[in-house]
Amino acid sequence: MYSFAQRSDTRVLDEPLYAHFLRVTGARHPLRERCLAAQDQDGERVVREVILGPQDSPVAFFKLMAHHLVELDLGFMRHTLNVLLTRSPRRVLPSLRLRIGQPTLRDTGFRRQCELLDLLRGWGQSPAVLDSRDLLQDPPGALRALCAHLGIPFQRRMLQWPAGPKSYDGAWAPEWYKTAHRTTGFQPMRPAPSPFPANLKPLLSECEPYYARLLERAIRPSRPDG
Image (cartoon, rainbow, N blue to C red; front, side, top):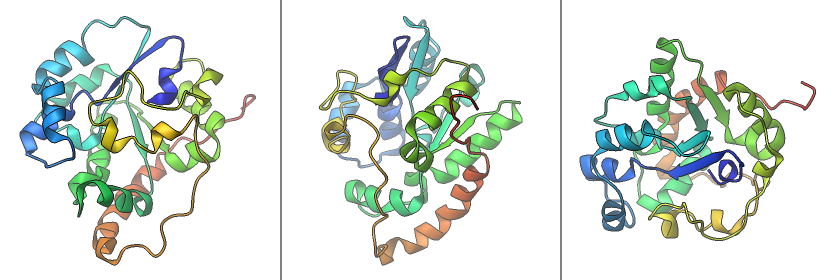
């Protein structure tokens, strides 16, 4: 989201369906009440008026979490260009545990991403699948390939952003974006937590087959002449 916000032709919106997700699931996330008060909790109205509503820029970037897409008519995704950003569950699960305690498969979004992939492909779409490893190891190459897939020009300004909170951050940013606020660009990949927490290993075993399926469809970084 921070990367796309730097584009000269793009407006970004941070997780507009988060309050909808919290309302319909009852999930006890950090800053829950603050988030519910800050956003429209009617997911269908958000889709109709915000995601599919009039836009004031050539490109509108909506950061959505796969597991937030619950109790909604997903037909709106027929009218959007869809990107599935994924990350190794060995990295996701320890990080997620710090925020919400013991996560479940639903919390990770891996199964939901595969369901969305199947749905979109069934409609004849070719959604971009982007692995965070490629994005961190080769930011310009990964973004160049993604932009080409989406049919928009790559802009080098996507590689850097100012540190600190952003005007377009969601209400949950003070809890979830502390590390991101210290960055000014994509950071080098760090080693995965070791040893991996024993109590997360059963969930890891559930997530890995879904992650492997996503990797099979992942786009790969491209060079300027490739």
